[in-house]
Image 1 (cartoon, helix red, strand yellow):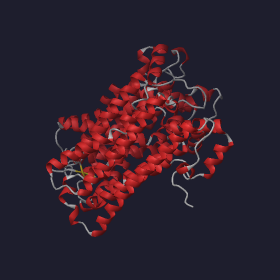
Image 2: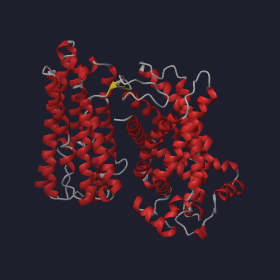
Image 3: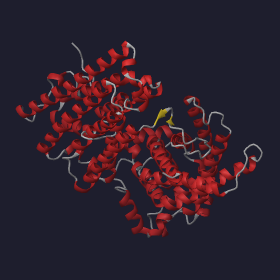
Image 4: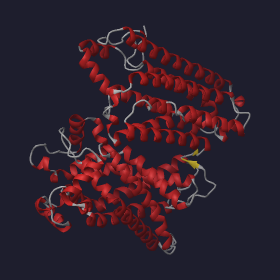
Length: 591
């Protein structure tokens, strides 16, 4: 793969991950920044936001937690190519300039970094500006009533209908004017600081990551304040784009600058800058992730000087088995996404989502066994445990789906392209992160450290982990059987509160946590023998699953369980409320 493509993909992936993590801050920043141009706020229909805390609390109460990610799918669609082109263009443009010695030609060295970053930013913006416009309009919807736009396509359609295709580029002039100093300082300062960072290519993972983050954070904050006035004007111009031109408040970029400064004061150009400063954590994450990814692939650009022999990503080797497993999860969930978008069917959801674990586990295992016949028994056992769990659960859920035909709990989620993407992306993330312990245990480094050479405590830990996983599978089977049998033999006006469901609201989640916690313990000895970083990384599996199950159980961000609980409360009334209050959420009560 060429350096350009590695830079392109590394930049896009880094941007998408960082944007999703910082989406709530981005939403609050946009709401505060554009409220003086929002018709609902100007008319008094929606109350003004008094600050960051007020905005956070009101969005959560009026629109729900999931509203913080409103427009995030569009943002990723925009940000992936933006950052991909930014990083790919930057290094290509920098190669055109003459070389400068950082020690003897600091001014020239810094100027080249700034110029290449600024030009890359301008070129990228020209390509993705319509998506940036749509993201601003979607994220700026306020209040708890009916939304102005139902999604990305609706936003673009209404904008073109009102003002023509050119209205999608309203504010492009000030945007380019603002992006040049922003990307110039953002990339230029980071590349310059990286050139003087003594830990830039250190083998000390903690110091390397920390020093890169400090360089990145300093660069992001400086870039944000340098370009923020331009960004404010750009957002204001975008906010009026769906109106007829005769109703525009601002006639041009210069007019917008002048009116804001005259009517609201210079400080108004920096409204939302506080939230924007928090948002720069995401911008810093992009730089650090990009630097580590390109370092892992041996591309020594953007201030780094990695070599082709470098194979570490934050100290964790990028393994063929991990890439293979992740690719399978990606491909299967992509198929699921396409089916959901084109047919609206619910039959395939669990068959593909859960079933993906089977090939994603067995194919890397067979590949590893072919290369290394003496693969540790613990590693083989953990792979087979996952295949057993996935095969049982996927077949049961698919059978249930064929009986139910349609899952009403997911109707809203899968009713839009963005909802489908969110569902299947989370399914992909679930697969990749949950599989970390048993996937990383197949690595060349881990295999070289045969489990037979491990201390006795690790052998016992592996055995305990295996038993824990089997117990988890048994709990899931019993919970599913009890609920299925209850629904067959009881009238629809009763809910299950007996057996495992009497000691936990979600015993199947508890069983799943036992399965994957056991897998972590089964593989801990092998993982630890190949480095603490690998073992620590695999801990993400049970931690992520607990966070996911807890969020779903309490209804964070909506979703199928939130819909089901609301329906149950409406149907069963006080009895169900009492059940929720007296029965533990996930971990069963004892005695």
